[in-house]
Length: 128
Image 1 (cartoon, rainbow, N blue to C red):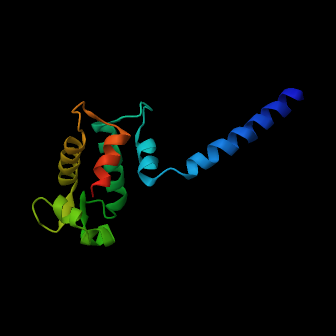
Image 2 (image 1 turned 90 degrees about the vertical axis):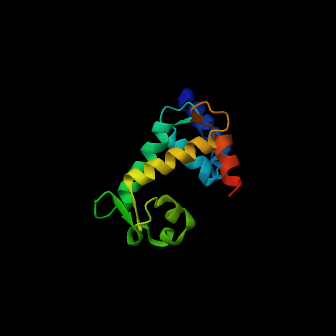
Image 3 (image 1 turned 30 degrees about the horizontal axis):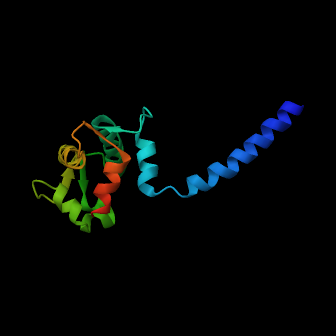
């Protein structure tokens, strides 16, 4: 019984320290942690593309591998939507999205090590 009481007290104490730290995480940090599937604190091209393809699939309501302005909603008026529409047909194909994500990856990977650190992402998004 003593062990249980000690373990419970430790859990409550640890919760007091962990909960505030989690509450202070930025959206970018949360996305980073979720995308980092192998837990190495670096994002590979595969991890980045995996998240992007998953999100594309969710947004592509009609399942035609094209993201039309209606499916993008408010994001369709964002400059990034038109930038990603490489052939300027008013929609983004999955191929266009992948090409753009790979270009973004190369631009953000400042040390050219083939992975993105949280610091590289923070630097890239603070410039926007």
